Length: 568
Ligand code: GLC
Ligand code: CA
Image (cartoon, rainbow, N blue to C red; front, side, top):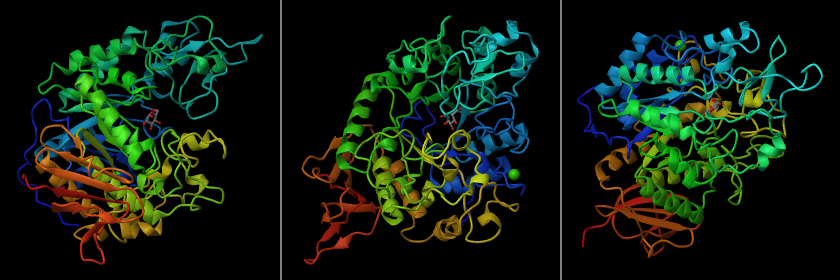
């Protein structure tokens, strides 16, 4: 790996709008780089790789949870919101990391998990040791059970990770957990819950954090009433702002409070909502400038590699962001979904939306029916299209290496509760859970854990990681890493206003072409057959361009090219 010297920061938009077109790199801290050789990624590891991030050319880092946690859900089960897990580092190291990131012009977004704490959080421990009906239980959602002795859960609800959503405590009461048993849901009707999260947001903002990613932002507000609906009744209720559990209109009162706090900082702290809602209109509420300001748009993550689908999704989301005044977000991969290089190697799902990734275990096993080469080709084309769009692009660690989902993880080594709470055939997420995209990154071709650290890796790395390592791709012409670096560099150079114009003459069939200010043209061929290369200066292509028999250049299938049109 070339170690770029930490020179002067690249020109960044340091004003309040820095986030609007930012390329944000998501770090899943336990799997990024291990600084002390205990097999778990940590802040030291991140600090040591800041030159890599600077050379990659991202504008910001989003750090998944690094708070004290028993890892019942990869850190999304938080014991303490204002501290660093000792296996990951210390607050002093956190400060050092912020300073070092800022030193190279990279902003930092941290994850906030307000829907639930862990069952080891001091409030939950207090609730358990306090008697039924005591104020300590009011911060969570406790209920008596049904049946003669309360031996049945208060309702037949299932958690997002499958299995029951209610768990019984020793004195007979039950508590609600929308996710794993170890993740009790907070009661956001309680003023102390509000106060504590404001304190948390202030704590990290004061430490120089630039923004927040809000986990399960659509779940905080709940209105349960005396008689609980059945899960069939819940399912039948519209999610139009009045649903008892999800995407309630009054959740935005919480975000209005947070906005007030964010705006006390200069520049204002930003926030991006993870909100799984029914329509782009409902998503827009989270992206409102009076609320969180931005919301994840997972539409491309759920779409097949198809020109028509992509065009509709881009058009819809740009129209929506024009209404809210926010900028949209684009995501192909994150810590919850099957990596896009693998997803795009699977048979198409005909636009059938599959939440958070595709069902990727075909009948005969995880490798069945996957064309990994085609998947990576398409992933690279999709990424270049994404990086040409207005809006911010969220990139997930390892996608810049073209990493595939790792299938070869023995069951007993899997960590994801979404795997353990379900049985084959009934798996939420993607059939094998989410560990396959959380395997520690390969930094070198060989050596202990491919350079992740000296102490092995907490999830097994496959032999093919060698060819996808930073060492293998660094400086290698045409590698995915070099493509990302060049694309990010050009994006920074070319990006001006947020407008986009479809090129109707070039678009049609399998081709999608659009122009950005300054004559920057992005053309994607989603099909299998080559098409004529449009006129213009070629800036970058996601795959090699071909020569036709008559000597003219062609844009092969599953390829994106960026061109600059001379201003005529
Ligand atoms: C979000 C996170 C996911 C986590 C869940 C519960 O969806 O992205 O990783 O399991 O919330 O916190
Ligand atoms: Ca470590």
